[in-house]
Image 1: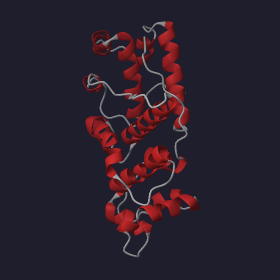
Image 2 (image 1 turned 120 degrees about the vertical axis):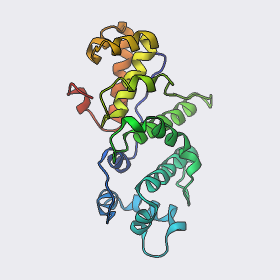
Image 3 (image 1 turned 135 degrees about the vertical axis):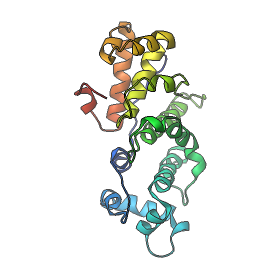
Length: 229
């Protein structure tokens, strides 16, 4: 039976949109700030947190100088700091996103370039861990992606744009069926619908609830309406 349950987490809208987007920063950071700028409160929070990098030319030039990946990671640290301490920080802290970066690095060979879906999954799991930590009265809780998920991804066909969903689905299958049975099913060419039918009914229900919670958290429901992840 699946031994973890994922809650809905209220994630920052603009940040989630950016992490789901095909971001290609070449000559201008304008596409990124077209999403950020309308939220004036967020814009001011970023200006304050990134002021150590600002040479007077503004936050957009800071983003261009740091690069999208570095800027994205530091932006994530702002939200994590707020979740832990209750207030937005006056500077960014890369230590707060180290575990998220590790998730992205582990599975980067299976994701599509320019998308930050792995970082999005890591960010969600980080915020889940913080919420469960608070909800369970400071007990140490952490939802980890098992080591065996890597070899399973190698059996998939190429890179996946929505690799976050692929990992979550495999985590549920692995937790319920076990590594050996799941690897055999994948090697036999069974599709996810067929593997899902192998799960006990209670595991099917928990898996569905968990995927719905993730979909709601990142404001994405279309994965439930398509056949391919």
